[in-house]
Amino acid sequence: MIPPFPVYLFDIDGTLVDSAADIVGAIQEVLAANGRPTAADFDFLKSSIGHHLSDPFGDIFPGYNSSRSTSSFASTASSIWRAATD
Image (tube, rainbow, N blue to C red; front, side, top):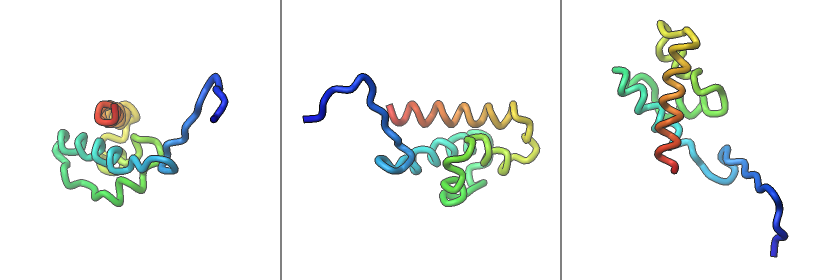
């Protein structure tokens, strides 16, 4: 039996749970809602996992390179991902 600890930490960056499909799905949903449903394929978006979530949006929407716009896209994608994984 494992003794009780005050805190348990889990690293879910793909070591224990492969969340790539959920993260990419959330990004794709934001892209579709903003008129760019085919702007990036799964592998391209998956390669951005581990970087700041606004990075792929800056690449796909070069006219929106202000941090405010890409952060808004990233925040929406994060909310979609959290709702899907709760």
